[in-house]
Amino acid sequence: MEKRGTILLENIIFIVLNIIFITILILFIVSKTGSAAVLEEKYSKQIALTLDSANPTSEIHLDLSEARKRADKEHFPKKQIVTIRNNLVTVRLKEGAGYSYSFFKTLNLNYSMTQNDELAIFIYNEKQESTR
Amino acid sequence: MKNKKAQDKILSVYWFVILFIVAGVVVYMGATFYGEPFDVREAETNILINQISNCLSEGGKLKLDIYDGKEFLLNSVNFLEKCKMTFEVEETKGWKNDQHYIEISFLDFNTSIRKNFVKQGNFKLKNNCDNNQRNFPYCKERSFYTLDENKNQYEVKIYASIRKTEKNA
Image 1 (tube, rainbow over the protein chains, first blue to last red):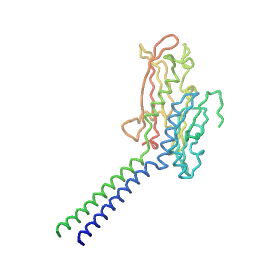
Image 2 (cartoon, rainbow over the protein chains, first blue to last red):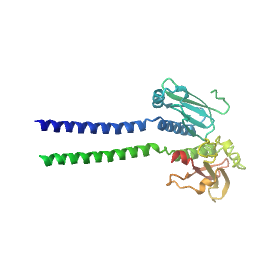
Image 3 (cartoon, chains in turn blue, purple):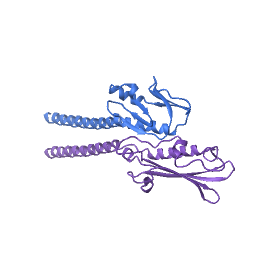
Image 4 (spheres, rainbow over the protein chains, first blue to last red):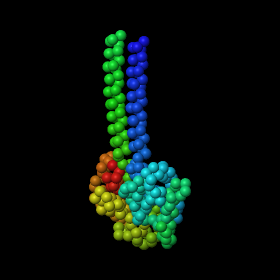
């Protein structure tokens, strides 16, 4: 009877160790996919390409809820997540330089984060002036 | 019974060796995959060519500020201004606004004689093109057919090259 008890304990330890092992692996992959650096790159390139494709007098809405959640975790202010200056998009989800990507179109634009965690970009004609 | 237990122990050791190998591979693949930047140069090059063609032609006709019926008003000097573009890039990794290159050829449709040629950007990119190699500039050429005000037919070839290797490869 004592031997059987030992075998059972060994099996339990073996299974627990396996579960711990697999959990660590899953956590590693999850941490990599949702990391601030990956999201900063993804969003800055997405916004830059969207602006490259844009034409005057258009309004663009981009869902940034994932970025917002990440920024909240890092206690980073929502208003500073996206910066568009000249022809450079910078996305920051935590303190630091963030990730910047340039676009080639010359655009007069105005942008803001909405209550729904969307980035709203308004692109004007040349004659109209942006107000940011 | 003793042999059976010894075999079980050896099996569990092998099992952990296999687990460590699997974990190593998963960690390596994860780090490699997410450590690499997203390569958006193909999309960017296509968008650049599309925007240039939108700038040159509208409704199947060359725009009047590109060709007024007598001469081409577009040249290498005024291209960026006319098409509302800029090839300025972020100051990073030693970039000096030299990450783009474009060429536009206006060819007579019937004779294939070049009527106008416009180029802008870093011409050295053209010599280093290799779309199969990640560390080389991405290049593409596309063409379309259009008419001028006098119904003359043209083939317009647009060649675009984007480097930005450090941020995409």
